[in-house]
Length: 439
Image (cartoon, rainbow, N blue to C red; front, side, top):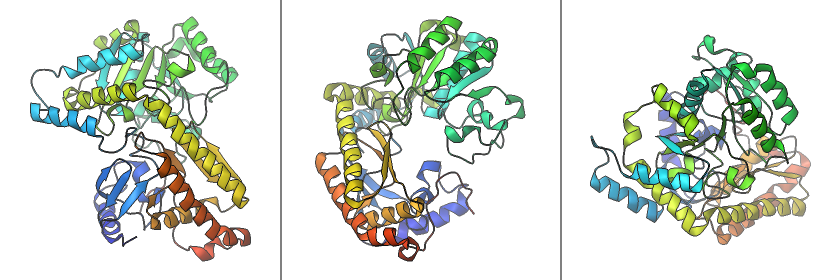
């Protein structure tokens, strides 16, 4: 593997020009390998990435933060986008693809009647919450999971700066969020139906919605989702499923289709456009019509590229049963990590649904060890972390070759792990585990 000087140097410049260094916390080099991560790409295709120095890597980590479930620069999606570009991306009139996409989304989710669009997950969640609040004419939201950066959600940390720790990254400061939103966003724990019921009955007359990820690091326990659905239906409170991450993973459409519980609103983004900005809020007519009683509007929500990319992505998912492939590839990774743990005598903990999975080695110096692993795997031509997002472009060969390389790295590091001398192997900065301000 060659030098990575250009990307490293460019990131040093970026930190002087861009607050936080990058536009997305999850893409900060400090989250992977501080001071040595290649940081920027020249081009990408399938699961291949080339950095600014011309080094080639196989991406076995977050696959564009989960946006590219088909793989980078998918030919069918790109062809649809290029056709949209040639036709003209923006016009006084509307793009017909948004009607086609609406029909596809409703066909996949027969419980839904209507669709609104945005271009990113965070803003789509803000749209969904606005619609629910307009429908109920109430303010408070009961939530579980991670739902973006907007004020309605981050206001939970106005009560305590640790409230979102179990849902988001620890250490997030709600600076700039109006203090008047204090108490309008209240969390409940995943798979704790009793705790949810206590919370909802305590504030049911004030609630605009219940917002949650239908699946998080693991699938719901029996009766959890159906219990929430029953309570919200009985009380007439809209149930919103955040499918920004979970959508188009295990099945084409929302994971709730597999789990057997229908919400009143579901929100999609990330994988919906396979790398092109696109988000959809789908829901029942009686709730969605409230969008006409408030103001929800944005110029670039009407472009042609977003819906064209989404239509091509959805059709490819359906045609190729992409969800089954993602589950199989993710399962191979999980099994491989556990086998390597047994081989090397390490306690390896695996979590997450198969297409969105993660692993960690349970030792005292785990963060240091994983930082070293990222460096060693980078030198072998792999982009890695503790997280793996499967794509349709990942093959058995990619997984097997990655596991072989990881086996070699663990074998090389085992003497230092056993002796407790990892700091002698690597003395550089350790990857961040949560939110830290950059200096």
